[in-house]
Image (cartoon, rainbow, N blue to C red; front, side):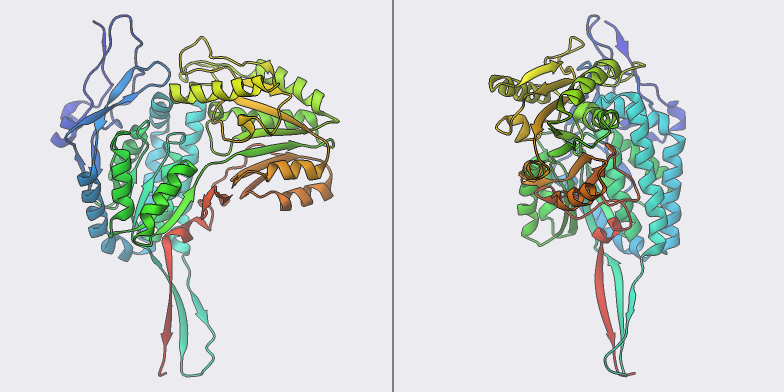
Length: 519
């Protein structure tokens, strides 16, 4: 029997409590896949509550989506642990909110610096549990850290107002104060950045947090907890309660209904978001949500086709199509349709390489699980049965059960599943259209509106379409739009509120009006 152990810091250098929480040795049969080697200095198996690493009555496995190998087992926190974390955050709240903004800023900056010092190890953890190529994981770590840097700076810029009074013996003030304990529920596709984009803003505002990471990718959240602890973030300010898929509904409900929680921030599917909204309504909590997308990518006759193809490749196939702002529907005007499809197919075949995320040259890692692969297959089968043509790809990749070929479909219509619901995989369906009005109508027909993209060199058309698209984020002649400085969020059923930018911190602040009379 072959066995693997996580590389780890010598035990004598770790506190006794931390020694007990290191993952158990990883084992496999001689013919099974070897799990990736992970940095033991950042890998933790317990929850993090009130500044302490805690275990639960049970543990659940974290799997490598590329091989199916078990990376380790993590504490399966339940309702009791979630409530303990909320209590710890609530008790830490008064001290954290009263700390000078400069002090909170310095601690966030220290956390950012530790992320940068450990960026390579953090990237390896992301690739191991999420599967994305290591280069993409390295990019995510930099993006993730940038939110701590940004909100460290924004912490010192939470300004109130002085309002001119209507009578002379009064002074009117507006204060901005933290909402309180925030429950942060995050997805698996960006297991680090989706945490810091929320937590950075919350901590900068003076809130304390309880993070419930996705069951597929808890190791990144726990690594961030280790670094937060090293940075000196006070006990109870940042708490993490990992849990299995089985425990997730109960833990989510506990966080959304606990009267000590003032704020819910969630990134995930629209269906789950609606469930959490229902739970949060009972105590009328502040809620911000970044939910499902169904992004259109419109290529007009006036577009630079080569540039549009490059943007399409980046927008569609990043993280194997598993991002909320990935293009889901390509709309190409009839005058350049054939040229675009031909060049797009060649670019897919030339530029994209399927493989293990740790292998050099890989651009397309595995999908997160076999259920995700099944959805891609179902969308392709439905489209082909209704007359769509497979230009390239179209089937599972021989590399493993969670791998799928980057696929391009033509002759697609709006009646097909792939144009009606989010695929969340490496499938690019192309619809041919005639007029600008037709394209905008198709793009706006969805009940969600997170991101939208279009390519044109007509200035008047650019202004018209940018204003008419019913989305929260528009990319004009650009396929990658996310940036720490800019607001991220959608319209319709794609969510509530905005994250990142100068607007992101407002989601964690209450406005208080003070009337000072008798002067």
